[in-house]
Image (cartoon, rainbow, N blue to C red; front, top):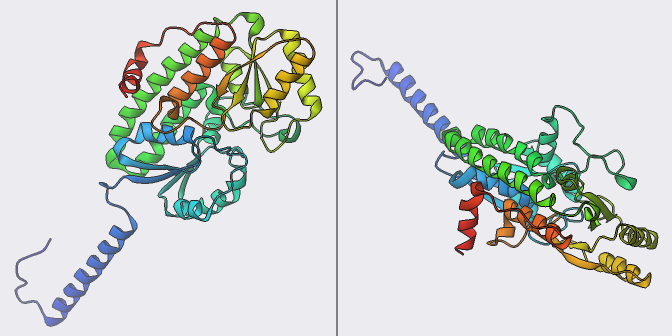
Length: 343
């Protein structure tokens, strides 16, 4: 506590007091430079859109999120630019998927994680599971490694919400209450989305519950919503489909009689078109049922540029093309739909 005067103070005590005040002021200035004021949003860099969307939904005005890989970008093949490294280096928090989804960025993320707060969201979700029975392993060149596409199952992805809340709350304790409130709302929306997806997929004729796509990014989706999945390429798009892969997939299409197969927004349609041509060469017919969002979300400022909108698009596209009828949109998501319908 400071006093207005120091009666009887010696010159030495005055000097010591002045020195103490100087040191305190210097420490305060140093702390202010190293720790951003609570009023400033957390500078977050996220690798892919699905991860970034969770941070935005939970963080609200207390976060400022930059996404490195936008619409149409394949994270398996992505190479960081010098600008990306600068953005990552300047971040207060880095959030990424993990499980080698960002293969080319792995080394950079590992080095930066030694001095910057990081969250590997899918890896943390996996750590939080009571058992590994819902974690899928890859085949072929991905054997023994966990499939990174956890966002395909909405109920799994929802497990990441409290993890994001916790990390953000550590960085901005004064925003923690808001993080918890927004996280609760978002979790409720994801629960409703998951139930709607299950009900919608249940309308597809059982014989046609087969999802044929360009690469193996939908195993969690299929496991959660009761549909078999056949990806022509492996889990990582670094591998390419062979002629044998094309022939085998065409045989599967002919055997099951599925009416549609699907391209992906981050992968050339040539592989799926080759399967379609091979089916026709053998006297069959199959249509391309639409484009699915596998490793990237849709354009910014569109419903598909959000996680909920991306999953809604994928479910509706698959269900409709395979002969089902999407269930009524849940009341819990009416506010979300109203926002986008008004645009």
